[in-house]
Amino acid sequence: MSRPRPSGRSYGRLTRHERNAIERMLDRNRSAREIAAELGRSPSTVTREVAAHRYVTAPRSRYGEPAPEDLSGACPRLAAWPRCCNGCSHRRGYGCSRRPRVFYSARRAQEAADAELSSSRSGIDETEEGAAAKLAAIRGGLARGLSPQQIAATTPGLSASTVYRWVDAGYDCIP
Image 1 (cartoon, rainbow, N blue to C red):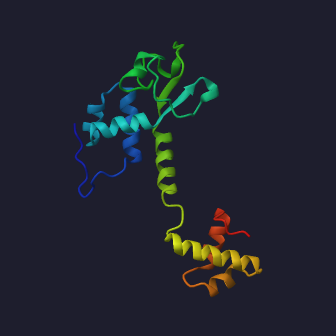
Image 2: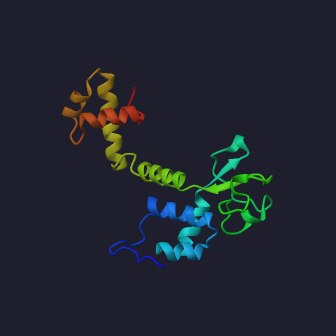
Image 3: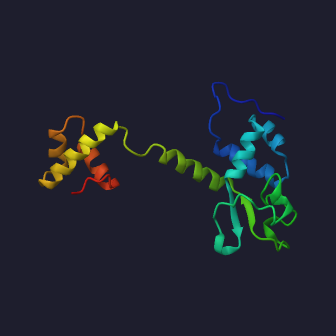
């Protein structure tokens, strides 16, 4: 029951729905190929997703940490696909004394993807020389006691909101 990929989409990011489907199918011991066929994605996309978003649930002191790369000594299930405890007969660790316990969580994976997407948009969208000139203007204006509006009015291409944002972000503006 393969779901066709929506037209116009070429190698887009996984959606929340797809991540939830991956978690559900991992809980049912489905293979990476079966999951990929169901989602209309490449098996390598599924395996990379699961490997990148596995989290430790036990021991409690490491709860929520990303899973270490090599877990082959902990449990045979962690040495090969799916490399997590989802779908294990000792689900959620009942009767399992092995540590660490590692699970794929769609919710955590989506949170990490959203954070990565947001952080990739942060920073200064400016050439190095342009940013240096604007930072120098902000530094000089603040040193003279000017308001962000006054600094923006005397510097072409600089708005008062940019001055506030750059100072709040700590872009070395404060003299």
